[in-house]
Length: 375
Image 1 (cartoon, rainbow, N blue to C red):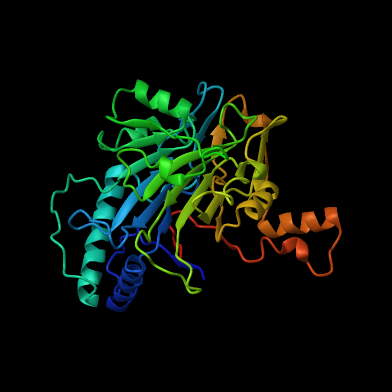
Image 2 (cartoon, rainbow, N blue to C red):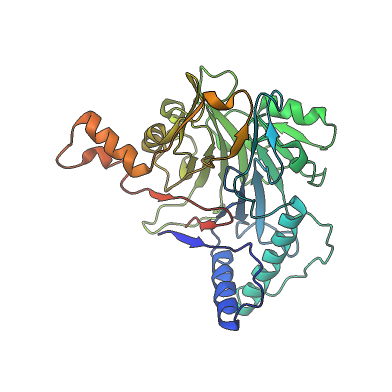
C-alpha cells in the first residue's frame, strides 16, 4: 500500500472549505498513523524523515514526531573545486526556501497532529509551546562533503544546537566552520558489529541509530549509504502473524552502494527490516569515472536488502556550467527499462523468477514537496 500526500507543504490561497477539510483530514490521519513520513524537500536529494515517538517513550510537550533532515540544499548554487570548474543550480525551486520556513511548517504540522489526536480522543490535547524560536528539526544527516549534500549556506540557517551526523570528510568540514555545538561522525554498521543499538550515539534517543555502510574499496565513501535505524515498537507489539515487531531502517544512498556491501544487513543481530531504500535511477559518469550507479545497481541493491519501498533520489537534472560540464554523461533510465535490459541480457525466464526479489517492492518517485507515508 502506498499513500502519497501531495503539496502538504503548500499554503493555498483561499481554498474551498471542502478541499481544506479534505486535505487537513488526510494529513491528520497520516500523522496519527504512528508510521514514518518521508518528504522530498527539493527535486534532488534533500529529505525530511518524521519518526513517530514510540508509545512507551516520554515525548516533549506538543511533540508527536522526531524529525531528521538529510543533505539540505535549498537555494543558491553549489560548486566543488571552483566555480569555473563546476557549478550547478536547482532546475526546480525547492518546496521550502529556508530552514526557518521548514521549521515553521513542522511547528504547524505538530499543531495539526495535536488537534487531530484531541478530536479522535486518542489523547488529551497537549500543552503547545508557542515559542516561535523553538527548533523542530531534531537532527541533520550529511552523507558527503560535496556542496550539493553539505551546503554551507543552508546548513548555517539551522540552530547551532542542532546535532549533525556526518561522514568523516563532511564532519571535518562542518567542524571547521566552528558553528554547530555537536558534530558526530557516523559510526560504521558492519558485519563485525551489526547491532544497530551501538549506533545510537548521544544525543540520539535510544530508539534511533544513525550509521554508515561503505563500499570496502571506496575509501572516500562516495558509494556508501547512511543507515537510519529505529525501533517504534520498544514495547511488546506483535505483527499480523504474532511475531514481535523489531527495528526498521531507511537506507539512504544518493550515489548508490554496491549490493555486496549491504549483505550484512539481512544478517543483523538484532534483526533490522529494510523499510525504504533511497537510491537513484540515473547512471551518471564524468568521463570514465562512475558517479551515480543508477537503476541497474539499484535493482541489485534492492534484491539484497529487500526494502518494502524503493524511493528514487538524486535524479534532478540540474542547471550547470563549468569546465567539467562537457564530460558529464547522464543516462536516464526508468525502473521498467532497467528490468527489460536485464531480461534481454539474461534471456527471458518463463516464470519470471528473475523478478521475484523486486516484485513486491513499492517503487515511488516523489516530486518536489511530496510526502510518502511508510506503512
